[in-house]
Length: 373
Image (cartoon, rainbow, N blue to C red; front, side, top):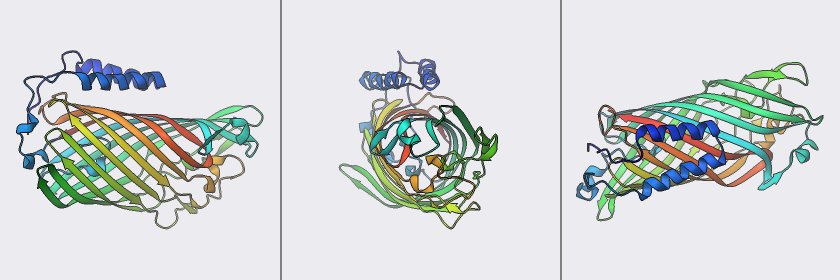
């Protein structure tokens, strides 16, 4: 593995970390734009003369470099005997309702329902562990802790907030290399990803509701898991050159059976493509385009009243989203210098279509840490 050199004379790890924390605390569009500007500054920085020349690295060795798409975990392929430990914090904000592709006002929603959500936030702490028993297989386990909050407006003009938090569903998966081809244009890998999600997240979350002056079951978006065993399968392609890393993958998640509350979540199809550019042996930037479709819920939780609020209507949960992601990877050189990486990503929704009304996503910030050993 190559040992990265310190190449950020004007952007130390401390400065970058402070900017990240400022972004997450303010959680505003202005802060997101500031983070995007930081990415552009890093892209424009001159390459350190002492940095490793990637053009001198044999193509057969490129697949061993730690140039993964940080938030596309199901694309990671490691060498035999390698472990990877990681942590990711995702902060997501949703505000304003949309039906189909058009925004709708709170008053429009309240003509159909007694209550409408106005804002939702979710913080997700995800821990993941990977191990490669061979060059062709990478095993992965992911565990998330979720913290959700939703604000509501009633027909009478009152407001209230509900909250839920706890462990989500555990996901276990395998990334498998089917073939690898080395050409004059780079190294190309083709593979499969498959796994299963275990129903460890709660589907019985409750909170105090002013309308009934008691605790009651929270609607579907505020639950922490699916309550079912959910297999997934997909295909992936990865490409490497001396400066670039790109790929695409499609993954389908199916819901099996029915959970203890009489429903199953809709199946999900995810498609994403990305390209990453290494500017030095310490800094790379990436752009990613993702789209996903979530189907409606089958069945219904009898504890929920679908006439009360749209989030409790099992026939109003399907959606299709397209998102643009920008970010950078920064090797901070802790311990084994070439093994530790911090990644930052901001997300801008560019298309949202709901079987609404549903809250639309306004922004997402991710910061992750990974170590390979």
